[in-house]
Image (cartoon, rainbow, N blue to C red; front, top):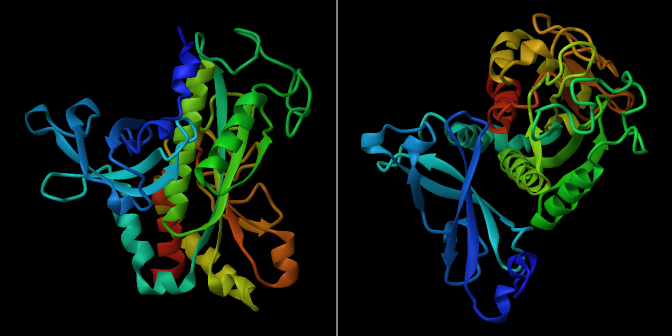
Length: 356
């Protein structure tokens, strides 16, 4: 009898043209990823070739039981690193049977902003630094921390190497390669300041693609930690006290910012972000007030600030950008559990479309 792993790794291409597509969507909490599988007759090269599907929204807190059908519309496709071959992952957004976006469909409004002619002309680039924490399954305590206790204080763990400094590297590396296989623009990975906390970066990518890719990268990470028997946390402050929180720093530039003299455009954009600080903070993730304390490389949640090479500011401008007079800036306010559709489209809308 074949081992289970042998069956999981069967190459369907040897016997059939049929493929498996994993339809992925975001559930009612705004952070719970859901998925289910569908067999299609042959290979697919564009999401428009995938049929619409549906699911029971009453089981995801997105519809009442007496009218529970929610429609899945595939918006982006990726190679499936788990099933491989011609099999796919499909990132979907959600609609009522009448065709209206449901309230938790944040992609719909984001896509409208990114399709605006003024935004299209500016070619907004995003690079998102997604931090996360690995937890032990039984006790929900960071991976390889003493149960009920603590490792040594922060200092040696950031980008650290060694069994006493690096907790969970195999998960990080498996995720890195799986994302690249899928076609996600992961530009790098690193260990973070708190042990068992890690980061991967998606980008630079343009417009709505940033949200699609980050969500699918999160999905792949959820699947890998599921296999490893480890719990994945996007809590912005998983351990209270003198430990770093987890963010999703969002690097951003437009065509004008990347052109000669772009530093003046950057400063005007930062001024606009300051004027809408409260609105952005309200949309930048749940529990962010526990992270943005003015300590541990964060700015105070109630105060807007910016500076060159200042990781304690709301907005950081890099030394290279200052020196060259053009480039990008980093919004350090978003929490690790932010919705990238909301954050990226809001940054673009405020800096390009909004007129104070």
